[in-house]
Amino acid sequence: MMTEYDKLQEYLRCNQHTWLITGVSGFIGSNLLEKLLILNQKVIGLDNFETGYQLNLDQAIAEAENSTGKSLSANFNFINGDIRYFEDCKKACKDVNYVLHQAALGSVPRSIDDPISSNETNIDGFLNILVAARDAKVQRFVYAASSSTYGDNPVQLKVENEIGSPFSPYAVTKLVNELYAQVFAQNYNFKTIGLRYFNIFGKRQDPNGSYAAVIPKWVSEIMAKEDVFINGDGETTRDFCHVDDTVQMNLLAASTEIESATNQIYNVALGNRTSLNQLYQMIEKGLIQRIEGLDKKDPIYKAFRDGDIRHSQADISKAIRHLHYSPIHKIEQGLDKSLDWYIENL
Image (cartoon, rainbow, N blue to C red; front, top):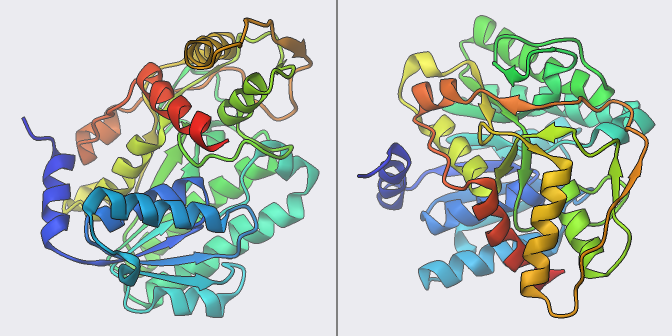
C-alpha cells in the first residue's frame, strides 16, 4: 500500500517546482538537496559554509545523478551568501515556491560559549529569510525548529503544545523562531510550518569539532580506537531519528494541501527513546561486525553537560495525523545504513 509520502514523490517527479534550501551545504540541507534533485525539482541553495562543506554539495549531486542516471547540475543554483544579510535572502527567495530553512548555528554548548553569534544567525537571520520569503510570496515556509524548546518540561513524552523554560541560548533562539512564525501567520497570513527536530543522524553528519553530534563523533573515535566519553551516567535518553525521515517531514510539510495543517509545529522523531549507553553498545557492536581488528572497549564517563535535558522522547501522533508522517527507519535500521556510509567516508 502506498503511503502519502510515496504519492507525493510520484507527484513531484512529474511536476517541477522551485525550492530554496538555506544551509544547503550542511548535514540535513545536503540530504534535502539530494532527494529533491532525485525527484526532478529545481533547487536554489543558500549557504556561507560556516558549518557546511562543498564536499556535501558535491556528494549530494553525485549521489542524485547516480540514482537517476541523469545530469542534474542544471537543476541546482548555489548562492554563496549569508542569512544575516537581507539582500542575500531576498536574492535567494526570488521566484521560489517553497522554502526549507535549515541554516542555523546549532549546538547547545556552542550557544553557551557564544550566545551573540547564535542570536545573530538564529534570530536575526531567521527574521531576514522570513521577511524575504513573505515578500516573495512563497507558497510555504518550512523551518527547522528544535526539541530544545521543551526545556525543563518534566513530562517524558513531549507534546507540541506543552513546553517549558529554555535551558540554553540556543533553545531561546529556536523558541523565538516559533513566535515569529506565529506572528507572521497572524499579521500577514503567511503559511509556515515548524519542525522540532529531535536527534537527527545519518550520512554527511560532521564527526569533527568540539560541537560534533554524538553518533558520528563516537563512530569516528571507535574506528580510530580512541577513548569515547559519555556525559553523565549514560542513562540520559534521546529520540534518535534518521535523516531520511527528516527529509520526508520537510517535503510533506511543504506540500500539504490541508489548510489546518499549516501554521503549526510538529515533532520530527521516531517516537522512541534510547539511552546513551544503549546507543554506544549498538554503535560499537555494528562497527566490530564490520571492521576486522576492533575490540570491545568501555566508554569513559564524565560530568553532565551544562544545558542538556535528561530525557527526550517525542509524541509524533500530530505529525502522523495531520501530515501523514510515516517513519521509515527504526534506530537499528538507521544505524546500519549510517555505519556503512561512515566506514566508507570517514
